[in-house]
Length: 640
Image (cartoon, rainbow, N blue to C red; front, side, top):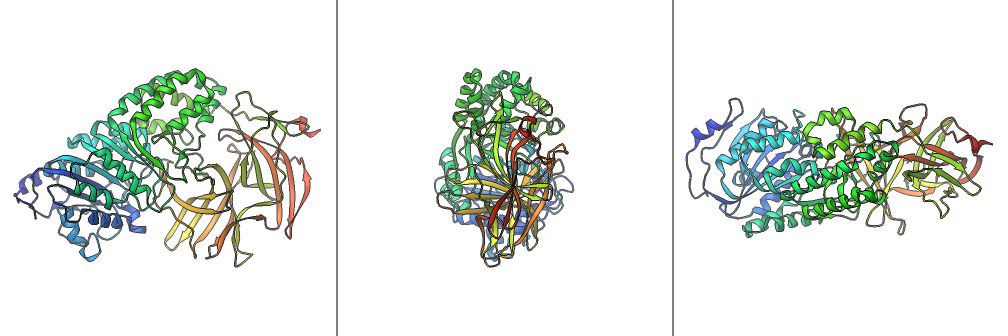
């Protein structure tokens, strides 16, 4: 029980706007608290589909145990979901939560501090009201604020499942400013929020930030351990607490994770250094050759929120990008070194697991999905500092002017790429040939030999596909795109699928991990949707394929008559069984092809060395070589 109960109804009526709901309890204690944990939980579809909010609430209660309210008070504002009891917004302390959870169901009691059934948790006014109410009623020496739901980095946070409302970074910063409160630690248990754009927006209102560069799995943070640590040691340092949050999250069974502790007090110095670097990089946006150098650097392995159907990624690891750009621009070495040092000073602690490329702990917007119009629409949420912003705007403008393709020339022993800037990406590609149409099944990066020549590997007709081992007729071809080699040593490919599971029907990226040493494979589906502004929003549901799932696979059909160079088409349908496996074997009977492919960035590229094969009864036969197919024209000198 609280030490004192003071009647504050008049105060609460004063801070509650008309129509915003009503208080249902009169006894809120204004006594000073040592530690206050505030959670803004937009339960949304994560609760409706996987009860993720309920699971994390249970962890919160387990961690709190019998902690004294004077040592630690926890206040939740939860809602924004179609799940019964989660509509609108509800304010509770841990006391009400414990009573509510006694029957195993959250949200089925009227014993709460405040409830507005019509509130939109994706509306700035709802967040502002909640934070202001917290400030008025829960004075504390040390304060933590956690945002819980989907995240989109520069595109903002949270989606109210009922209203489809979403908070922009500007909405969040304005709500924090209006509340008059600052926090020792601000955390985002959400995807893609370990970004410089997010840190810049939060910098005036906090000391530390915790966020993930990559998407997060549905289980999210592990709350029990760090809340227990805070309750048992109410004077624990926030950097130490942040490390516990990172470590316990990383120790969960889910894979493909990153998490960082960021010092917001160091953000101004980092931004100042980035401003100078952006100004120095401006000349690289004044020519196609310069643009290609920068564009190549953005193709670092550490890219986040990637998909193939829409193309590109949400963000890239800033430190990895700087290392890549530095490898090709020695004139920028001093400025890059300063920014890299500032990143190391800013990121106090970070981890990525063995399924994610090594990173520096802080991401930044990638240009791959951004048009000049969208960048303008995003406004301040996408802006960092004038020097960098000007560089980025120029980069977007010149991107549309780069329509050239690398030139491939045949030599006696292989192929040469006419590539003065050394920025082309070269692959061996494998296709399913449907009449005169070529559909990409997969690719492998190629490196030149000591003479700068590329050669196509001899192909025996084997490639990866999904096979029901109990039924040879139940299989699906995949369109697999090479991404990188992750720290575990596995090769990461991505494939576009639609996944149907009971009430779930979603587009998804299928992450395919293949260990070339052991042959072990792992497949993880990452669902996503496309927001009205065209930005990809990834779910926090990272799903293994399960029996009774239905999967439709998609691949890129080559068509050079189109501006994009092709289109996505369905190439397979598969009912998943308990014995469905990714196999590397002779492909099913049909016509296939192999070619060398070179491109600049994600622009449509050029093909050479086409070979067409027929596979029948497990045997492969070369039926045509150096074929000119309309979609695959080679330089004239190759056709003599």
